[in-house]
Image (cartoon, rainbow, N blue to C red; front, side, top):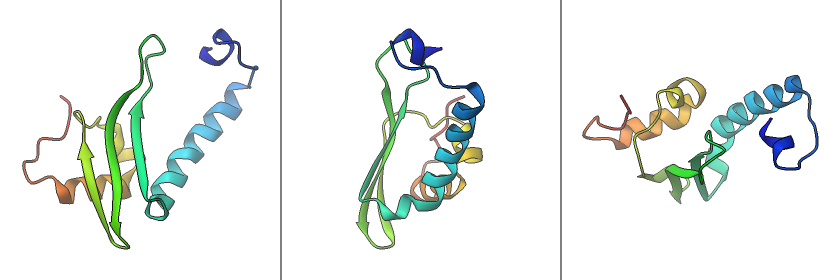
Amino acid sequence: MIRTKNNGHYVEDSVIEYKWKAGYKNINEFYHLADHIAFLDNSDDENIPSYLFELNKKNENEFEIIIHQDIPEYVKRRLPSIFDLIIQGDTNNDIFSI
């Protein structure tokens, strides 16, 4: 486990999975309350996390979307509301990794 390898405390796998799923659900539901959100890829514990994309609130109903690299396919499944925002802002249809 990455957590214990980096001298963190032990956490049951079921707790990690529950919080992981809840985190996606919550950010997808409540992203509009934040002024700025940065999404990073930290899936490789050997490298520094990299920016995927950012949301910057322009006003109550509008976000600036900054895409730093190809958007992984899982964003469509795990963050459908945010995915819709990205698609609306993507005029070239070239946001996905292959």
